[in-house]
Length: 323
Image (cartoon, rainbow, N blue to C red; front, side, top):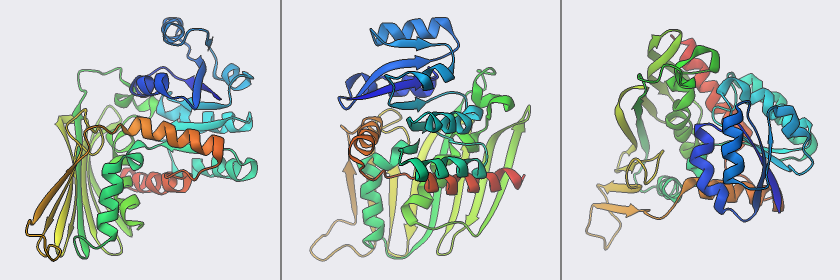
C-alpha cells in the first residue's frame, strides 16, 4: 500500500476526493494546509490521518510515500522539487510550473532518483482521448490540416479565486490553456513553429486568450477564457473527415464524453458517414490515480511525462510573451 499525502485542500483536491476515497493502491495518510478548518475537514474525511500546517512537515512524514500537490499555482514547481528531494513520488496539479525552464530541475531529480514525478493532466488517461488519438493515427480523417479548441467558464464573481490573482499565477492560459494546447501536442506529437495570441487582461491577470499557432503539418486555433459562458470542445479536421470531442475536459460533468467521427470516405461496407462513440461510465480522475499508483508500485510508464508538461508550458510561455 502506498501512503499518499495531500498538499493543499483546494479545488483540485475536491475534484479528486471521491477517487482518493475509493482507490485501493493508495491510502491517504496525511495532508498539509495552513488553514485549521481545512485540516479538520480533511481528518473527518480520512479518519486517522495526520494533518500538518506546513508542507515541510508533510515531506518529512515517514508514512508518506507520495504527495499529490494541489496548492496555488506559483508553489507547484518548488514544492514538487522539495518533495522529490525528500524521497517522495509526486503528482502535481497543472500547471506544474510558471515557466517551462522551472521543470528542468524536477526532470533531473526524477532521472537521478528514479522517483515518479508527473503533472496531473488527467485527460490523457480517459478512453475518449485515447480513442480519438487512435483514430487520428489510423488515418480515419486523412491528413490532419486544422485543430481548433475552446474552453471557457466565468468566474468574474470570485475575485479572490487564485485564478483571478496575479500573485498566485492566475490566468486562463495557465489554468485551462494546458488542455487546448497540450491536447493538440499530445494527439499529434508535434511542436508549434510559430505562436501568436490576442489576450484580455484584468488587474495583471490574463482572463481570455485567443491563440493561433502553426505546427509542422497543421494549423491550430483555440480560445480559453474565464469571462465567457462555459463551453468545451476540441476538433481535429482532416482532408477526409473530422474528429470532434464533446466535454473533452470535464467528461460527464460538463456533458457526456463522446467521440464524433464524420468521414467523407467511410471504410468499405460502412454506409454511415457519422459515427458516435460514448463513454458514460469513465472517470479520468480515477484512471489518472490508478495510472499513478501503477507507476509508483510497478514502474509502469506514465502517459504524460514531465517532458510533455514542459512542452505545453513552453507554448503557454510563448502565448503570454506575445501579448
